[in-house]
Image 1 (cartoon, one colour):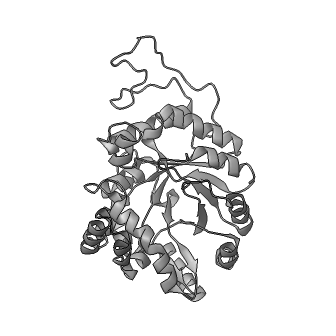
Image 2 (cartoon, rainbow, N blue to C red):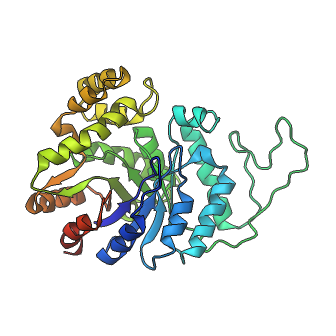
Image 3 (cartoon, rainbow, N blue to C red):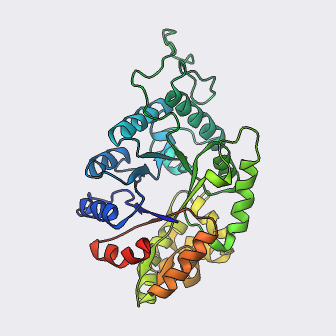
Length: 345
């Protein structure tokens, strides 16, 4: 099992120590570095800026949001990154949720599975460069012939020859249909809030996709990159308390109350009553109470926190569950020093 550094997206200001973290990740033996986007900083620009100081680690997005760019624009960014990095780019994509898609990007959220399939198919065409890129739509018709079209559009293929036709595309997916689609059309699954306890359920979803006609990969060459906090500490309670507000935000306040994919993930884990209570408190402005309502076991289901012996034991559990890479957030160089023996052993 390999390790990836998850840098995430920026808060109110750019983080100040990322260059140091990226350098430490490469030196420590991390396999990859990932950036993200939400509705502030984008994913590609920081990846290119900080990635320019690396020579070995793979550089990925986790994730680029589909509605932020047309599939052709995303393909252009990906093939550019792949050339600049000498073939080290991983394109991680996700549909986001209706609050962001419709509220921020001004695009319809309907039919996310169909949109994802179509989007990835167009990117594959661009990267293959076997002919002019065309798509019958209905979501991303190329050439565009709908309302307002001039009728002058024509199929094109990229001027720049992509470095790799098989540039890896990983999908961020949380629900059963999305995960099955990921196994069918992608090279890897970016799993957020993964728990080894439900590996059997995830495998059923994945196997459905692998079994479909024309599936791109099999389990043997498919990557599962699970996001997880890995924290070496003798103060487990202190770390749990630090994480509670973040968990309350994602479970109770992220996305629309009627459709919060993160909350649905925890419902599938068996925390339905707790999710309802956290959501009720958070949505009523009682954020501290919402954080206090996050139980220890909910956090520990999707994180690895404890002393070195416990962390080593849990890393084996996650690997045996099928995870090929852990995407971890690291706050400072000191945390890298603590993680290094685990990664290099």
